[in-house]
Amino acid sequence: MHTTLRISHSLQSNGQQCLRSVQQQQCRHVSSFRRTKKMLLVQPDPSFTTTTGDQDHIIYNPPSSAPNVYHTPLKFLPKDDPRRRLHTLLRPTASDSANTPLPPAVRPVYEKKYHLKQADIEEIKRLRAEDPRKWTRVRLAEKFECSQFFVSLCCSAPQIKDERQAELEKIKEKWGRTKREAREDRQTRKQSWGKAV
Image 1 (cartoon, rainbow, N blue to C red):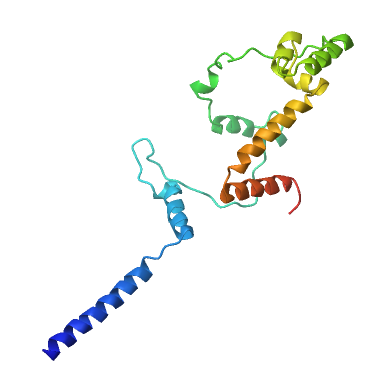
Image 2 (cartoon, rainbow, N blue to C red; image 1 turned 90 degrees about the horizontal axis):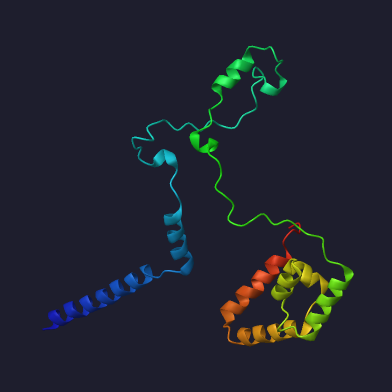
């Protein structure tokens, strides 16, 4: 009876050790998961992929090297040099798709008109100050046939801007810590754009 108890006790302790080792092995972190997922997204090198009937050729990636001293660029060859003809023969010919005309433009080409006088600009300012909700940038641009950017240069509506900022603050109050920190990080990255690191 003692032997059976000892065996069961040893099995129980071994089982706990196995369980602990399995739990330790299954511990994964976000970084390792992201790394394995990222490796799946990487496209394989063309030399490792299987060739099909269309792509039945050898891929040769020559190492970068200094230009050959025996090769003269076409620009420096004289007009009557026979090597010019060789250059034109070796140059790849344009395909049919390169010769086809482009499709028509989706929008008509916008041409700037410098037709507004000082009186028109004063009228834009007056209308925008009178009722900024009715006379938005879009409506003023349509009425005076100019761009919305020009309307924004002429006048602004600070009360509308303040209202939009208040709405944005209300939305930001509902954000969690992660989203707020992500936005703050984005702002700091934007400030470092164009600066020497």
